[in-house]
Image (tube, rainbow over the protein chains, first blue to last red):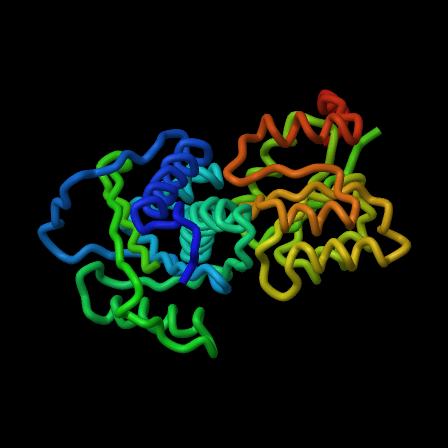
Length: 177
Length: 133
C-alpha cells in the first residue's frame, strides 16, 4: 500500500481523464469529452482494447476500449491516410500508442513522487464489446502483464470506469488500481 | 546540406508523424521499430539526429541510448527522447547518457521542429528540379 495521500482512486481517475483529453486534443485534432451517462449501443459493437499496466511499488492496470470505427478514424487522422486504407496493424498501433501516452502521463506523475514503477508495453485484443469472449481476452492480457506477480488482491484494489465522447463514438477507460 | 533524422519508436503512428512533420524541410527521415533495429539503422545511416522512445520491446530507450553511446561510430549523434514517460527518474537516466533534449508525448510537430532547430540546422526543401524525370 502506498503512503502518498495524493494517490487516491479519485485522483488517479482524474489524472487518467485529463490525459485522455490531452492525448486526443494534441494527436487527433479534437478532444474527447467526459460522458456522464453510458448510452448502450443497441447491439454488440466490434471493439479494440489496449491493455496496459504499471508495475512496481505502484500498480495500475488500464483497459482502453475503442469502437472499431473510432480506432479506424483515429488511425486515419494520425497516419494521414484514407479510412479505407487503414489496416489491422495500424488500428492496433494507434490504440496501443494512445494507451501508452495516457498511462505514461499518470506513471510519470507517480514516478515524480519518488515511487519506483515501470510501464508495460500495451497488449491489444479485439472482439464484440459486450461479449464474454472479449472480457476473457482482456483478463488473459492482464495475466500476461502481471507475469509472475500473480493476480491482484481484489479485496485491496479499486475498479473505476471513465467514459468519453469523441464525435459520435464513446471511448471507455476501465482502470484497476 | 540535407540532414538525416532517425526515429526509433515501436509506434508506426509516431514514426509517421515525425516523417510528415519534417516534410517541408531538406531532410530524410529513416525509422526503426525497436531499439535493437534502431542501433543497426543508426550504424548504417549515420543520422544527424535521433528521436528515441523509451517504452519499447526488445531493447528499451534507455538501453538503446546506452548502446548508442558505447558504439564509437554513432556515439556522438545527438539524441532527443520522445516519450510518454517524462518523469524525473527516467529523464535523469537519459541525462547521464548525454541527451540533447526531451519531448513528452503527446506532442505537436511544432515542438519537434523547434527543438531540432536548436540542435541541427534545418533548411527548407529545395524546389523540385523540373529537368529530373
